[in-house]
Length: 313
Image (cartoon, helix red, strand yellow):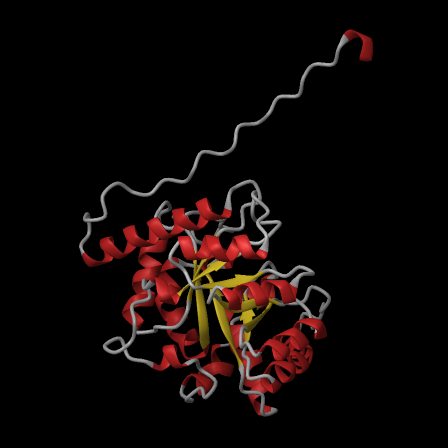
């Protein structure tokens, strides 16, 4: 059930927690295609075939012309922060599926202010929408309080949990938290985990826009109701139309591009997305000016097992 009626009042409210870039108008804000505004997502092990160290990862980002990334966890949180600060790289977000005091403590100690990206809980099994909103709000409240204490925001991240992937449900959770004085929770909208009608996307984006704190791009198939794999930008059929909606809206908050391919060099994956993003930008400015459509890399060749020798049979 979509909760349009529950969110109508919220859409008329000025959202105080919104990030500064998202409040800028299109005239005075940087382009959503500006490399200074782009974060590389999911580039640390296990999503990097080269298994880079924190130092090597920061060097990779600099070589790609990027200065932001989202960290997908691991035990070496302090090493990651220290390497990022040394190289002038911003950790824009933590992947944060559950409350983790160690990450909060490290964030506070190092004086950084990433967003905390929280996905839905599969442990919550109630099916009634009102009860589910209450349960999710209760789960997210202490995470948001932890984040607020260190001047950080929480982003609701649509990720592999059908009820939580409904953006109107996320809006309802945010509005419920605001009734308790929690104002540092917003939406991280992922193309990669969205399954909806392309025809309805402009209206959906308009509803979620006041709550957005980040948008993560991905290639999207012609049928956007099917679960999308990780794909290079520009290599599929629907992301151009979706990015056109984002750009035309005037929203100018942080943008992410996704690697998340364990068998591929993370530098290659992010580079392919940046090239695709450049193609998209040209096509939006002048259809046909981008040249050949970007292509997905060929899948790695399967290694055939060696036949067993006669003595081992």
